[in-house]
Length: 305
Image 1 (cartoon, one colour):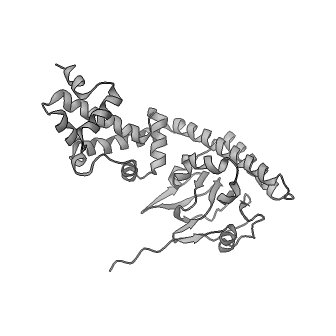
Image 2: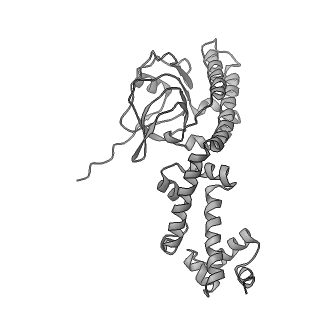
Image 3: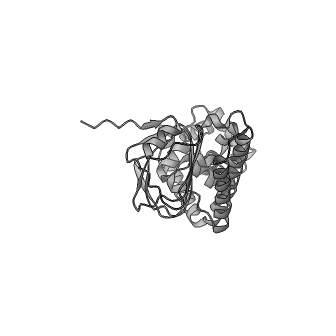
């Protein structure tokens, strides 16, 4: 009999997590910064799945080890920034005993009623996985560490009426810099990004040519991501950086290219083409085709006659 999957250990409060890791009690119930640059603290790690009820932003300058994502483990040999949103399930294995760096924990309630409470969810990198960490240049590290130092200083100062507002501003600035640096990473790590683009293209080409469209319909972003072992958000953001299209738009582009091929080289009716491309209703196919090409399928076909 297959052993049932172990339910993730859930941490509802920062105090619970600090206690489980053997860390001192947090200075604030809704926000905590673990400053371990000197590597003096060796918190316990979890080999079993766990989830947090709060955001986690970790800067690890020298971390080496393996992190689990789904059923896969990824070696993480460089330092960088990692982002985790509430309710994500993960497990980490640290192999070299280096726990140095910063770990910022933010309960969603701390962001209320500031605008950041809403637009923090728009940062796609909170849905990235450990192997999609932000690798910082030296000048970027200086900027990020300076912001962590400001947060650390504020948390260790006397809490007053301005503390939350000041901390919110610093968190917002940290996220804006991270967003800028991720855009830079998609460009400077172009070899890695282009390899991912090629993998996505190969998966789509195989899927569109194998009859899967009739059986299963259009491939989803989640399906593509699972095939290339990256998160849907990272795949979509990489494609947007390289092609100007997100993953859904890229899938539609490849579908239209396949439709053009069938319309130009076969005698299939528009309805038959629509069926072979996984559309239940030909009208839906014609609407998408015209949206993408400014021509109806019949107008496109006539241009070849």
